Length: 150
Image 1: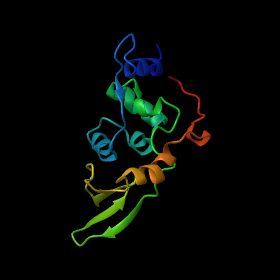
Image 2 (image 1 turned 180 degrees about the horizontal axis):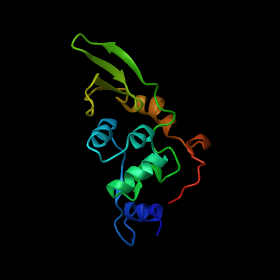
Image 3 (image 1 turned 90 degrees about the vertical axis):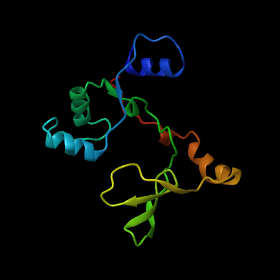
Image 4 (image 1 turned 135 degrees about the horizontal axis):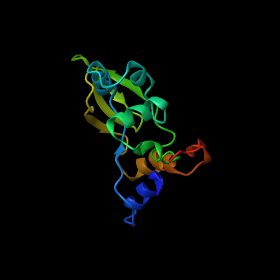
């Protein structure tokens, strides 16, 4: 089975030949830490992005077979994404930021962990139908035409 076939079979509760060892991406801060510890090269960290040669090299070193985000060739989330932007600067150094999913988060420079959500654009049936549902419709722009190796 290919990685894609195996992954889809597992998600659909069908027969598969084995459990894959899949990665789901990295925090840049973690990659830089591993580089300082000698596990990765600076070129790998600087070149890392989904589908890149550097990603393949990092995955191989860490024992991952593939990046689960990169094996499916379509936008699986909202499309188009919301425009990310700062909505408010707070006196304690935090900022209220609308992220690409339309969630309002509190972010602070130098804090790499997952930021807390403080507000949502999705509040009710109306916001679902008017704001989110159109971003989940099939369009040809959602399909990545890049050939997959897996």
